Image (cartoon, rainbow, N blue to C red):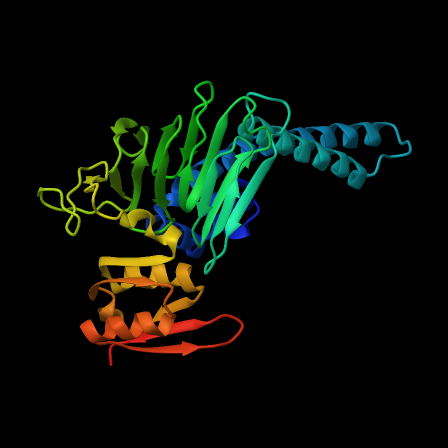
Length: 353
C-alpha cells in the first residue's frame, strides 16, 4: 500500500477529513493491527492536509474572481464568460497544485520522478533474482522488493516488504542498504536474511556471512553491528510486559520494541534460511503463526473457525511435504480439525473439534 493508493482511497480521504465515524474507526483499527503501514499512512495524512490547504486557497480565489466578474457584468452588459469555463480552468489549477505538491513531497531533491522496479513473489511461490550489481536475492512467498531504475549508478538501495535472503556483491563505493518498516540493514558484501512481513508480531535480521549494520527505527535509530550467526529481532507490536531475560520463546523487550539479539551456534543448521532450501521449520510457533507460514508456503487462505486454538504451540521440520502431511503431523501433537475447500483459491479452515 503506497501513499498514492491511500490518497486515491475514498475511505481514507474521509478518515483524513474526519467526516465519517465508521471510516475513522476502521482506519484507526487497521493501523493498530498493521503498524507497518503507519509511517506511510501518516505521510499520506500529512500530504492530504497540505493539498487540502492549497485547494482552500484556490477556492477562495475562485469566489473572489466570480464576484468581480458579476460586478463587471452588472455594470456593463457584454458577452459573458461561462462560469463553467472559469470553473474548468480553476479546477485545472487545483489539479496542477496537487500534482506539484505530490511531486515535491515524493521527490524533493529532483524535478524528475524516479521510476521504481518492483519484484513480487505470490503466496505459494519463491523467486530468485539477480540485481544489476550481481547481488543474488531469493524472495519468499508474499514478499515484494523494490529498487530504483538507477540502481547501482549512484546508490544500491532496496525496499522490502516480506522476507528475502541476500547474497550481496561487494562494492565499497556503494553500500547495499535494505529498507523495511522496522529496521534498515546496511552491508558492503555479505549474506543475510530479513523477515519483515506487515501485520506480524516480530521482524528479524540474521547474518550468515560478513558484517552488517542494523538501524532500529523504533529505538531512536539505534545502530547495531552484527557478526556472522548473529541477528536481531524486533517486536512489531509492542506489548506491556515485566522485565525478563531475553529468550527465543518468551522474548523481553524495551519500550522501543527491541526484542532480543539472536546468537546461533555455528554447528547448527541456520533455520532462518531453511526456507531457501524448501525446508519448513516450526520452532515452538503458535498455530496462528503457523497459519501465516502455510499461507505463504502453500498459497492457501486460512480461517480460524474456533479462535481458542490460535495459541496452540508446535515444533517440527518438514522438507517438500504436502500441506495435509504437515497438518496431520501437527494434529498428533495437539489435536485440532481442519478442512480444505477448493475453489478459485484454496481455503484452509481450522476447528477445535
